[in-house]
Length: 313
Image (cartoon, rainbow, N blue to C red; front, top):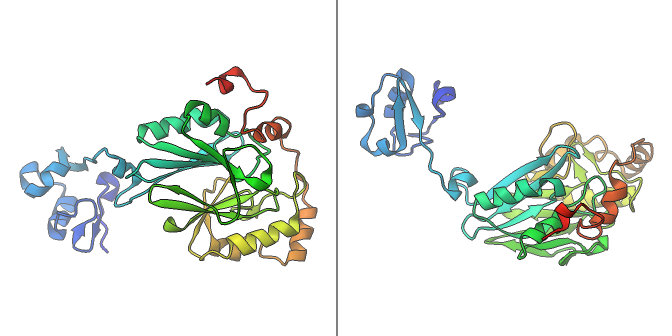
């Protein structure tokens, strides 16, 4: 593969026999265009005129504004990883751009306006708002979303004993368009922890059970180190090694990992079960700042003793 030395200026690459951005532009023409910077509109191939504009000596790509383009070049799915920076919580938006059906994983109440705006901007129908577990460090946004979008269904593990429209258990499927998420029970951080596996895209959303080079704490809220160790190894690290894993949190700026990476480099979960239990027992972690208000609220879909702005329809 040859790479255009003008890539940082015009964003174009040369791959195989065609330019990767405009497949109608032959390799030879692309080389002349990108490397010389002396071409004018009249020298561009006719079938490329609709895709390019020339300003001075640099050719810029004019990208189409469609749902497919927001999904990514040649992709037939939509995926967004969104951050709530106070609790360092990741929220995930998944959608089928054809049917417009979407799923939101682990929404945070303060960022619901942002999340629902993105869904509206992309013309999506938010079918499910789901939680990987009952969170202790933030209040879930599922109840607030349901106040705004009456057709959206909330979902959480039945083992969590929390309220939701759908109580999930091992092996359940959540469908959105042509896609589905498989529910895997991964308790240990809490009794109700679940992992959502998107086999079509080789992704898994692990909540707090497995973090990047870490895992959820087990010193409160039904935590059990042996159970967590077994869950992660049996239900997450048993996935194919190339699967990308997306956690509910990260405190070091990392966004994802893979099964292969965690099996090789996770400083806790590469140890034996006995060593893991010892490591978890010796952790000295601070009490979660929002736990006293987050837990009771999250047991009722995030709507408990909240300001009116979050409870009104």
